[in-house]
Image (cartoon, rainbow, N blue to C red; front, side):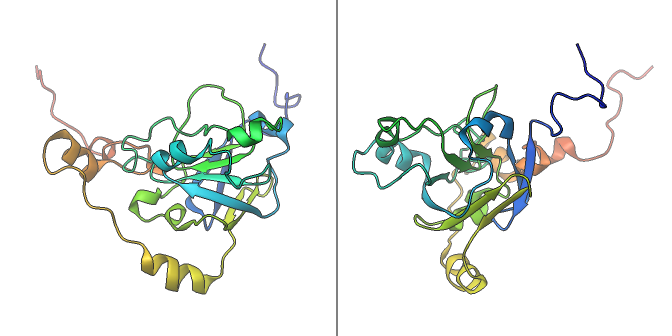
Length: 213
């Protein structure tokens, strides 16, 4: 039932952790779920980006300018941007592509996804776009390279464009909550690479025994 390391089902694991200028603190892809689509190693592909509401409004537009080689990029769906890192990671395939028989394409987000869903979905991009992570700087039409064998996820723009234009133009969104649990959450939740946990729960230390003898 459990095979030895000398005779594995696969020479590689089912999950891959990616890094690169688009995910400095990492991203995750379940590449075995995307192998049949051939999406695991891509040349530069043009992105189509936006937040979840924007995606809902545009993904089934019959005039949407996407093709099988496009990359769907979902922003503001991470621990703070969601908020709560919702299960938006398996973005729907646009209707215009489904009608062509296309059933998979590269999809990138700072959201999550549970279960054994299929597809070339890059998840947990960290740091998330809501806090100014590189995913926030992606614009429709940018070129993105996903290279799973090399564990790389990169946005192909110049350093000058990145630093002097994209980052300079980005503005931090205002806090959503001023009090209560929402304020506690936004002040203390960690990024995906640190477990999306409250920092005060995850830090080392000990508490006194509530029932000392």
